[in-house]
Amino acid sequence: MLLTDIVVKQLNQGGRYTDDQTKGLHLWIKPSKQRYWIFRYTINGKRQNMSLGAYPEISLKQARQRAVKARNEINSGINPISQKKASKADIETHKDRLEFQEFALDYITTMRPRWSNLKHADQWESTMKTYAFPVIGRLGLNEIDTPHIKEILQPIWNTKPETAQRLRGRLERILSSAIVNKYRIGMNPAIWKGHLEHLLPQTPKSDKHHEALPYEKVTAFMTAIKEVEGVAALALQFTILNASRTGEVLLALRGEVQDDVWTIPAKRMKSKKEHQVPLCKRSLELLTIAKALDPDSHYLFSRKGKPLSSMAMLMLTRRQAAGKTVHGFRSTFRDWVSEETDHSPEVAEMALAHTIGNKVEAAYRRRNLLERRRKLMTDWESYCLTGTWGNVLVFPEQKVA
Image 1 (cartoon, rainbow, N blue to C red):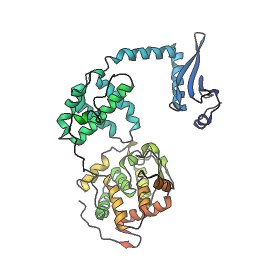
Image 2: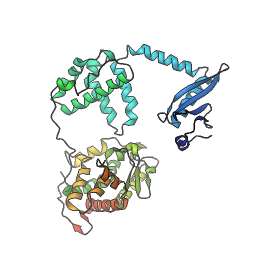
Image 3: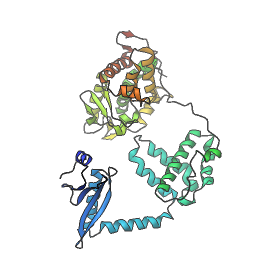
Image 4: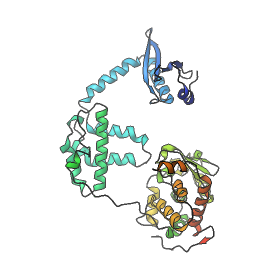
């Protein structure tokens, strides 16, 4: 049969199912309902079955890719099973001399697609190169011990507490991966609870938040930004008007907008759940202008087909309002809703796509509330652009910063 994601998900009868699209690929379902991808091939007159992994850990798409790769090896005169065994032997031989630097960079490369924040991987690599590699970069994974971790962390533990804590967490995760992959034996020397907490002082809780512009000043800010030429100014206006996160906007695709609704896929959301945004008049105008500037791009806001950098909107914000951040406008929006309007808190929280901890409240909010959010965002857009909404008139301060 022609396997599809839906078909594979629904299959539960034991047996072997052949994928008509990929030669040699089979889905084997055992009586226990466990499912495995198998690649069957014949080489030198002998039939062999090669395991490609279990479903759903390995998706249909991944299984097809692995089967095609194996078929290419066969066409090149290579037995993929023998090649796989040889690779495993190389890994075992390499384990004893695998250095932390090599493993850490490979870990970051592997995890990079899972991080929705564009800056995340760069920050990981930067902190490793700055603080960790000079101390343990050339050490084997099994050579790293607690004194090494202390040597890395102590110089910045009190002077740069936020960086130090993030660095410790990153070291813990990298070394944990080394242990799981059997490259390292023994405990994780970067773990905090029950270990480093007895060797390093507790760093004070940071009171630092994303600096937000008071909502009384947002109209003047938007007026100033409107006069700035360039796609970054368009993207910043769009981000503020929709109370969005930077990462949600930077990688937004034109295909995600249907009529006047922007659907953000789960992979780009902090909550990992799909989110719909009702777009108002000015937001749609901004998209039209941005498309005219870069007509062949797949992104909502781009230059020569490439998305904006993670710093583009932040630098523009700082030029207009020193010390403020793009993310802070979400707080600006929330403060305005609470202090100036009669819109309900649940509609505001839904507009911000906040994760709800309370199960009863979360169940209540599962309803999209799209039309109620559209009314809220229309009022917010009106306030941002004119200082008025509904029948309310306010006189915002004219000084931006």
